[in-house]
Image (cartoon, rainbow, N blue to C red; front, top):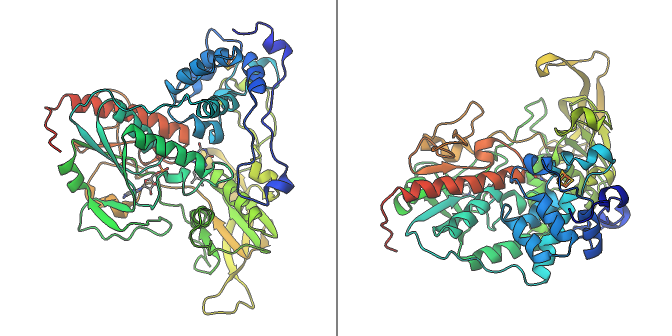
Length: 501
Ligand SMILES: Cc1cc2nc3c(=O)[nH]c(=O)nc-3n(C[C@H](O)[C@H](O)[C@H](O)COP(=O)(O)OP(=O)(O)OC[C@H]3O[C@@H](n4cnc5c(N)ncnc54)[C@H](O)[C@@H]3O)c2cc1C
Ligand code: SF4
């Protein structure tokens, strides 16, 4: 413990946020990294708990007590080593992780504010880059094995880095034109700058990881390369899973859970109704100098349907694109804004959260179910345009049953509707013919413990991340990618060495 009275005497240090009025004029990150002194103060509040609940709750089991102590004492290089021992991507988690660790921090029980672990993580990695502590980490030996990883989101990247370090040659195949999965195409630049992502990928390339973009992997060449509505691909090349299995010692599928949940209601065919990722991906591309986002929201009323991160991201992007107003429809009931921490700690706090995007200005309607989309009366053009959505208030009952409340029907104007209702499973079109076992939700089935961890029903194919777990969080994808690499390595080490090229 660096400072025995730190948790009593030192206040929580918040990262500075650019004002709403200023940040909605651009797409850059708007949260500042702590200064050296601020980070030391924040880390000095850590009590170095004998049972660190923060570490237990973190899916990566980051060693918070140790790196907090090192930061508090200004031992930055050691703090960096302690952090990357469990988390290869602190520049990502330090920006966009919901920080489950902080909810479980014991200091939250005593003070209103726990230790700001996430801001310390971000500071450590930014300090490390700025001070030349981040070094190329090529593997020191060659196992003679090679692995193909399909997908390049956090699960794939974590798996690739771990295998590369273990002396396995890794090639990552990605159908989009750039690497990163949802970190690149999905999560807006103001939450995660793509320069931060590029810096990491460059580092991984110098470590020895190979990347092939615009390459769609399908179960077989008999599969049509047309994916389901709402799933994007920039592929110029198609490779079959069987080809990869023939070329590599193992294949890891880390293809995410890309099939969006749709709202098949009357009027769904109207112009102006889009899946959230159609909007978000197009904006990521526009921001990196490609074609302009074809979904125009300037001066319009945008209705976002859904209550999660994707919906929030749509709000933030719509605000920056000059939407006249943004209305969010969430069919969940409104949660209380506070809870007695002592009653729920160290578990999740089920309270109403307000994201930075929601803070930027939107009307949030809770317990509101959409019932239809209605065309604009004076809608010119070949296809009628959406003009409003009809809704009804709902009551939640046991077993998540929702009942409409009579007399609460309403009509809400809408020029653009964004459907952000989550994701179901990986593309069935791409992988149906792979005959890999699936769970009841349509994700690839695999255990997470034991000798068969992350092993699909095909002896050469492993699965990790959202395509196995279902839509989740970056930190879980990183943890799965890392653990999957261990499983692949153990499997490979049981095979005879035979790589020739
Ligand atoms: C809009 C949005 C915002 C989010 N915000 C947050 C957040 O703030 N914090 C957080 O923790 N989580 C957030 N999440 C969730 C998080 O992004 C995901 O849980 C995480 O990215 C899953 O990682 P993954 O590697 O399993 O898959 P993904 O990141 O989905 O990556 C899968 C990759 O596989 C590629 N692929 C798919 N099929 C093929 C194929 N056949 N051939 C080749 N390549 C293929 C895809 O193109 C994609 O690049 C968000 C999700 C969304 C949609
Ligand atoms: S629970 Fe909080 S105070 Fe305790 S070790 Fe973790 S970060 Fe420090």
